Amino acid sequence: GQNIDQPTEMTATEGAIVQINCTYQTSGFNGLFWYQQHAGEAPTFLSYNVLDGLEEKGRFSSFLSRSKGYSYLLLKELQMKDSASYLCAVRAHRTGGSYIPTFGRGTSLIVHP
Amino acid sequence: DGGITQSPKYLFRKEGQNVTLSCEQNLNHDAMYWYRQDPGQGLRLIYYSQIVNDFQKGDIAEGYSVSREKKESFPLTVTSAQKNPTAFYLCASSGGLAGTDTQYFGPGTRLTVL
Image (tube, rainbow over all chains, first blue to last red; front, side):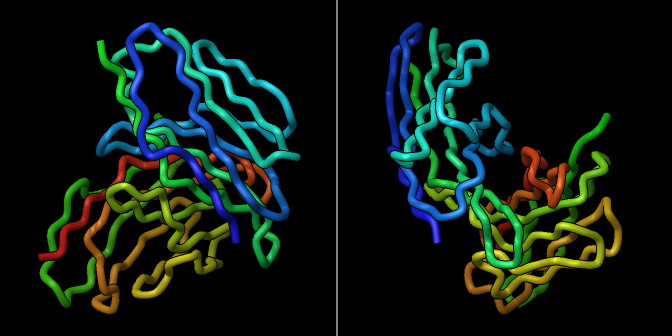
């Protein structure tokens, strides 16, 4: 099985930078995803890492270290609309040959003025 | 527009009734998935299908059933055997080899069993 751990809740100030960590334990690792989910809505894709290093996409960046089983999502220049839940999902090999992401519980980010 | 649709957005049922949730996609994706989300929880995999006429149990399949007769459609039936059916249900699809590309999600169906 897989074990994915991320903080339950974080708060930050508008305009600031926040880092949301995700640690995981798995075998057959095949990539890590970050999704954003506003309350009552579907998750939307933010980033994907399969190799070690930093992937930057506008205000959002995601980092992966496979040897440490660790990833983080970095949000810069925070805006009120960034208040949402951020889901870390690890894709790994399952019995039968499939690769299906397993999701963490999500980190609820509250951005205040 | 390409995307994934789920209907209805809100659904109410009496205890003991089976209910079927719809999921349709026009993204030409081979793989489709059903997840369940409870408050404060992550998404838990119920069933997935990587190709038409084939599907596999996920981590919490008990009390649920699916079919995949068409590439575009992957309906989920919540049976009376599911002990705690009230939840937010999300359908997703992905392309690529064996569905290894990014998953895209539908808007979800919130099921409340009274």
